[in-house]
Image 1 (cartoon, rainbow, N blue to C red):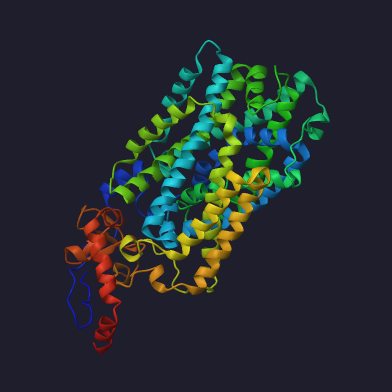
Image 2 (image 1 turned 90 degrees about the vertical axis):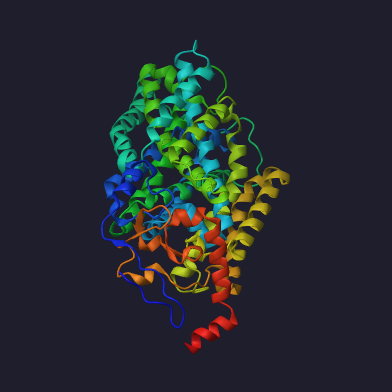
Length: 549
């Protein structure tokens, strides 16, 4: 197919087009999962596939541990109220995120370019990757503790090594080729263990309502109702929105409404947050264990009561969630190093890096500092979520800056978007300062303050923003040169592979030949030439020249 030259100037080389997926791209996608590219419609999966992959998060013992931990601070009733409010909030936010991700096919890293520019998106990928790595550590440490409880002669360091060695390889393949299948296979075992542990506890110890009325002997005065404290603790886990985004982009656009309402909506979080927490509270207060209640009481109690079957349930549950965690951590670290250092290596390499880091961190007592870690990481994540939701709300309804769309191609976004970076930076710094210097009250209020501040600042910035903050004004867009940018495949002049026109650009450093998203991100010469072309194309003299033509 030939393209028309720019009026009054020069011609550009024709696009090399095809209508089917590139076999070499498909071969790599089995493991890479389009981690550095837009997910084409041909790689999307149905409702069942998306739900099975995503439902791995449901079985995380992390939710059992956090629920039990919060109960130790504010009691059962307030914890349940706070979690119920969190489930509704999670559902509302992630429903919006899931629909948008399915519509655009973007990852968190790519979408962040629209909010923060190229530099800001690299930081978002790093933040996401590091945060998920922490969750891999937390979930893996739970399995190591359970294994050590069942086999006390086995050193905890060896238990941790076993966990990493069996879990990391399970994430070598992608969402639509493996994670949906293994999580679907293990789902019945998780549900059987969940119900079985409650039945086992009642049969052995009997049932009492004491767990429902539990109050800590020495309650901490947080200066707010206990339910609000519980709600703000779960705000520290809003990284789930980022996780939902990176899974939802594999859903088909026609399934977006169902996935938004069910798969990523409130029903999922009622089960994930509330049911898991309630089971953890009940088990921690029902099963007789030595010593005082602590963060691991429910897990250790399960193994002590059920023996091998309890250990098996913990292993199954954690295998389901940590395959997804390992996948997300490796994908986002791959994105960060590719964007920040132009170091493009296979995702499997970064999976190995994550595995090593996870094992080293597992040698610490990670479960003892879980709430403090959530407090610091939470404010930065909450700010990102608030800005993302504000951007979607204002641009989707036609309010705010009409040009503030989700442009993600590196040659068509600036290095820094002042609107997003200002809102994210200020809200995050304020939140971190509140956690660090505000004492108990500051820790409780930091997430909601950061959330509101980020949304307000970004909304105000949109009102005063310039189009150049969000997009670079450049000619020769491959999207305009094909009938359907989601179906037409265009060959990249650098790597030789073909990707959908929706992600392609023209390379001004190579005679305006077509270039794919990954190669454009990793080529400094292209980025410099694109910036220069935008500056020339947007100058007053150039606009006058185009007008005369």
